[in-house]
Amino acid sequence: MPYPTDLKYTKEHEWIKVDGSSATVGITDYAQDSLGDIVFVDLPKPGSEITAGKTFGTVESVKAVSDLYAPATGTVTEVNGDLATAPEKINKDANHTWMLKVALKNPAELGGLLSAADYEKFVSEEGGH
Amino acid sequence: MPAVEATTPTIRKTALNAVHRQMGAKMVAFNGWDMPVEYPASGGIMAEHNAVRTGAGIFDVSHMGDIGLSGPEALAAVQHISMNDASRLAVGQAQYSALLYPQGTFVDDVIVHRLGEAEYLLVINAGTREKDFNWVRDHTRQFNCKVEHLSDEFTQIAIQGPKGVQILQKLTDADLAGVKFYWVTRGTVCGLNNILIARTGYTGEDGFEIYIPADQRISVGVWNEVLAAGKEFGAIACGLGARNTLRLEAKLPLYGHEISDTINVWEAGLDRFIKMEKPDFIGRAALEKAKGDGLNKTLVGLEMVERGIARDGYKVLDPGGTEIGYVTSGSPAPFLKKNIALAYVPPSSAGLGTEVKVEIRGQAVVAQVVPTPFYKRPKAKS
Image 1 (cartoon, helix red, strand yellow):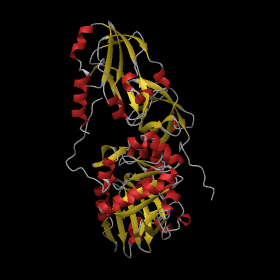
Image 2 (cartoon, rainbow over the protein chains, first blue to last red; image 1 turned 120 degrees about the vertical axis):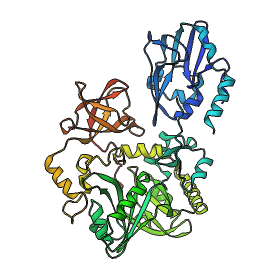
Image 3 (tube, helix red, strand yellow; image 1 turned 90 degrees about the vertical axis):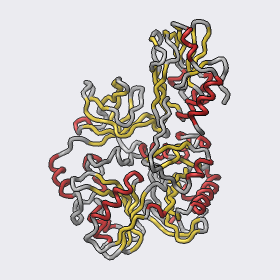
Image 4 (cartoon, each protein chain N blue to C red; image 1 turned 180 degrees about the vertical axis):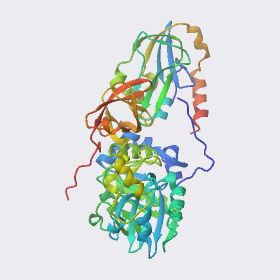
């Protein structure tokens, strides 16, 4: 699965797409594949603050509960409401299914995130399959 | 998303391990076994679960253990260590039962099969193999009866679902229509003579479990033949993930969850499978006393009313927020399309329709006590 090069990635398997001082956030194809059938997504409400490296929500498959980690610090401006009733959309196209829109507090902090190539290398080492 | 891979010193593999990997199964460590949890090529847990409810699913359950008891006093030995009444079994019949500690709690739950006049087979859980075998051996010494640990002798394949009978019938000369649920027979399967065929399972559906020699070449051959025979019926390979959600919908207990060495038979609600009137057995006296004392907790089915999924170990609260119990198993139910759970609560909170809350990551989420089993298979037409 090629990872889009216009996204940045975390080692916890979230992606972030930056557009000026705002960004969209989702989880990677590797994450959805590890989880299996996604049945529940718990996301913060618009107006909530999220902090880089801290959990901002959870995603659940039939078998497992996983925390979501914020790739950046900022204020949630919009939540993808479709995911409340159709979380399986993430399984179908994780790299393009956004969870949150965020007004970034400090776009410079994104420099520490992984590029698509680095992320792909990271998961190939982590997965071992 | 921490990817934690438990590394146990002795990870055990069934004879079908390499086949699961070739099929692209996701493997997990389960009670010391490297087992398939789901097959993405089958469509994953939900697809596997629903295939068993509507067609058929094929499972490798070779991790299950087996203990043989045979000899002149085999029946007396089985009666002494198990709670159901094995004297009621005809040759070829099986029953759900349990091995109990003297305090009336569970060593394990078992299926007791009567294979011959004085020959019994106990099928036990993977995680309790050694404990169970030692228990059975140590507590049957006074009987003239041979106790054998047969766990490594068999590859056990489960063919589960309404189409299971048609699939297996293609591969055997045994007349499966004549084998009732919880009965066993022997026959030629995939050209192998004298194979034990049991109409049993752990999915809440009709189905069969076959016990074939654990030899890898033979096991792989049978597995592939069963899958091929099932193809026209939509049968797919299924992993332990679907096995768990299937058994939960059917309220079949899982050792370490609904039953354990700290939970007694009355609490677990398994009254139907204990026969207090049969000759004395280990655990009976304590359970006689416990019956008089009344219950502190009882197993109930919960359905989530508000949005949220109860998981194993989550706290159950009363509507005021006081902790009253805990979830033993909780999951989305793929066929019922609800979020369900089994939980221990005080009898005062066990009435159908009682509102409780489940603490999910610090939030009290409303749930309701509902009838169980959550899922009951439609009655067969025959």
